[in-house]
Length: 356
Ligand code: ATP
Ligand code: MG
Image 1: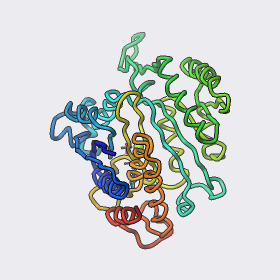
Image 2: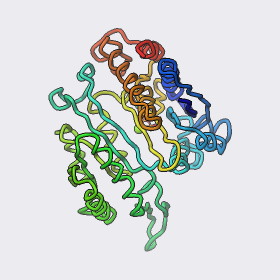
Image 3: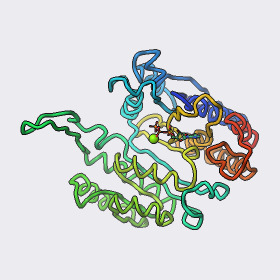
Image 4: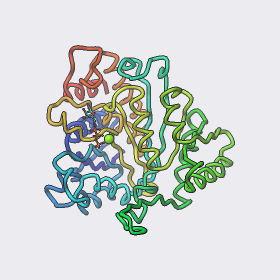
C-alpha cells in the first residue's frame, strides 16, 4: 500500500520522539512492502517563531491532503508569556477543529516488565486494559462566550459548556462500536447530578445503547470515576466522556501502568485524516538531551497503522517489538527505576527498529 503521512514534530522532545516513530514506520514499510511518504509541517512554538502563527495555513492544507498525521508535542516556557493567539496550544485546538478530530482514544495497557514503575501496587493494575474515548471538539474548550465580564457591577468571568446533541451521539456511538470488539462494556462518565449537559449526555448514552444489545452500559459520576480509576481500574473496559472530564481522567488513567512516556493516543476524524500523538507534552526540562522515551510516539504510530490504514499485522509487529525490547531490559530514564543502565532516545529507537 502507498500512504502519505504528514509529520508535525513541534517543540521540545516532540522532535526527538517523532523521529523514532518515523524510523519505525519506515522499517515496517520495508518489511511488509508498503510505501510510506513523509512530509513535514510546522506547528506550535517553532511555527510561531518562523511564521508568526501556531498553525500556518500551509500546515492545515498538507494535513488535509494526507492519509494520516503524526504529531510530536507543542509548547514550552519560551512562549508561556505570549498573548493567547500566539500560544502554541492554540495550534493544537485549531488543528482539532480543522481536521474535525472528534474523538480522542487513549489505551491504557499493562506491561508486566514496567509494573514497578506504577504508583499503584501490581495486584491493582495487573492486566489492566482500558480504553478512554474523550470527546474532543466541544464542551468548555470551544464554547462561546469565554471571557471576562462585568455582572451586577462585579468583576466576573464566564466559560461556556456547549454541545450539540449530534456531537454527543457520534462519540458515544464510537465508544460502543469499540466496546463491541473488546470486553462489551461502556462506562459513560458525567456529572448528571449537577450539569444539564450531563443529563443530556446520559439520555444520549441510553438511546445509543439500545442499538448495542450486547454491550453493557453503566453511568458513573466523574468524581466517582476519578476514585475508581485508582482503587479498581480493572473494572473498566471502554470509558467515554466529554472533553474536560476526559482530559483530566485520561491523564490519570495513563499513569496507572507506568510512565507518561509509554502512553499513545489517536484523535479520530469523522471525514478526513486522523491524528496520532503521544500524550505527553514537550517536556522542556529534558528536551535536546537524547533521553526522552520514544515509545509513546512509536506506539502512536502503531495505532495509525491499525486505525487509519487497517494494517493489523503491521501494528501488532510494532507492539510486539516494543514488548520485546522492554522484556530484554532496555529502559529510558523515565521507566528505569529498576535498572542502573539507561539507554538514550536514539538507542531505544534502534532497538525497536531491529525487532521489526
Ligand atoms: P503539556 O502541558 O504540554 O502537556 P506538561 O507540563 O503536562 O506539558 P509534559 O511535557 O507532558 O508536561 O511532561 C511532564 C514531565 O514528564 C516532563 O517534565 C518530563 O520530565 C516527563 N516526560 C514527559 N514525557 C516524557 C518522555 N517521553 N520521556 C521521558 N520523560 C517524559
Ligand atoms: Mg500535560
